[in-house]
Length: 117
Length: 114
Figure 1 (tube, rainbow over the protein chains, first blue to last red):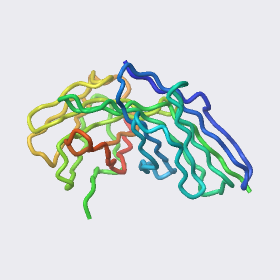
Figure 2 (cartoon, chains in turn green, red; figure 1 turned 180 degrees about the vertical axis):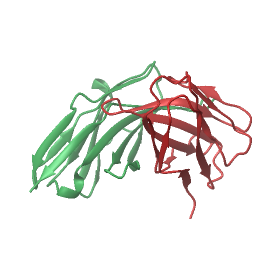
Figure 3 (cartoon, rainbow over the protein chains, first blue to last red; figure 1 turned 45 degrees about the horizontal axis):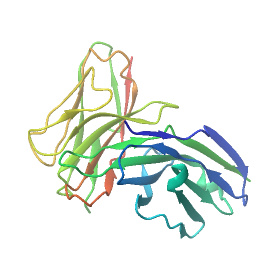
Figure 4 (cartoon, helix red, strand yellow; figure 1 turned 120 degrees about the horizontal axis):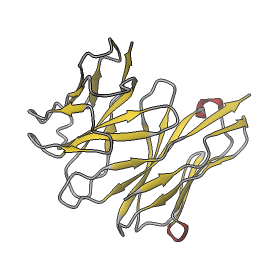
C-alpha cells in the first residue's frame, strides 16, 4: 500500500523567511509519480509540480524549489522569501503508474503554512 | 476553457436524506475520481472510474454510490448510510494515457448535513 506522510501539521513564518515543507512517502512500486498541490482558502487544488521516480534532479521554479531524494523516500518543498500569498495548505501526493487500471493519487494530510507580515 | 465543474459549491441537507453531487468535465478525460476532505485528514479516495460504465471503490466507499453513464459525468450520491457526511468533496479527472499524469481538480462541493 502507498502512504504519504507530511509530519508538519502547521508552520508559521514571517514574510521573507525561507520555509521547507517535508514529505516522506512509501511505495512498493519502482515507478511512480510525486506531486505537490497548493490549496488556498477557496478550496480548489492548484497543481505545483509533478516528478517521476526516475528523475531525481532538483527543480527550481521562481521562489519554489523541490528536493527529491529516492534514497530517503523524500520529496521536500522549499519556498524562498515567503510571501503572505503563500499562505495555504500544501499537499504532497503519490501516484502509481498506469498498469491497466486507473491510477490513484494518495495524499498526505497536508501542511498548513501561515505567512505573516 | 476545459475544466471540471462541480455543483453546487455549498449544499445543505437534513440527516437521513440522500444527496447527489455533480461532477462534469469537458477535457475528454477517461478517468474520474471522487475525494473527500476532512480537517487534518487530507484527501481520501471514495470512488474512481477509468471508463464509462465501470468504477471501483476507493478507500472510504461505504455509504457512497456513483455512476458513470457518460464520459463527461461522474455524479456521487451520499446516502443515508454514510455516518458522517459533512465534508468537502473534490472531483478530479485524468487522461487515460499510460504516461499522462496530469490530474485536474474541480473547485469542490462543501456538504453540510444538519
